[in-house]
Length: 315
Image (tube, rainbow, N blue to C red; front, top):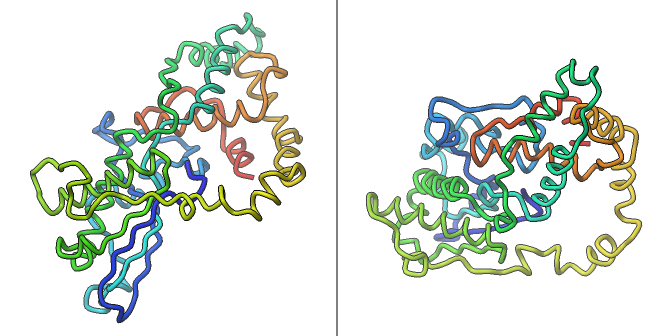
């Protein structure tokens, strides 16, 4: 879910000392659809930037708003005067490009033939049928937008930080808080949700006003800083516009490790291997993570791959 830094906020007081903290965005409870416990997948440790936040740090599961302080940074041992945090956006939908690839794969499943009896006897036919009938609920309009759980991620992060550093995040210091975001809608919306979490921390029980009317002010968009890779001439020249720069990426997609996965998945799904490619298979793999993160559901896509496949995707 992360192509680069999406947000940066800075809170500061007297320039006596500094405390800098790099953070990954809010680690929250399991989906509200699963109140009695987390739905888990053994593939979760291999989803990279698409890992569900609560899988990345289960220590926050008991109470996602409770701050967890490093023992070396106890209140009586230091006085924080500045906090700089690089924060990831909250949980989001897949992008339109990913959704269209998943739709293409779903179409292959629905159009597949009777299949091989040996594959069907091994259970592959059952899994292929389950996936063909699995609801394809993603739509183009979603296009990487923040989901409600993503807003919750950010609100809870704001509460944890305000509880952990009450002096820095006091209402009196609101005018010193600087929240900077890229123009990506999921990042702008994450910044707004963070400020809503702060406001609710200051005004418990009251619904938050429009972000523009809050004491701290709205996030400031700065793509030159937050999407620097779109503006860095060296990167654009030597990588983005360089036909040979991504040679090893393409070589991996067509290499023996990926070809083995393609053949295996084609057998499980009962589709011609020539109709599959590395990009389609990667989207199928990450669909497991999206369903887990957004709905708290372990979809049949999670059963297509095993740990060895997941390790190959992480190469």
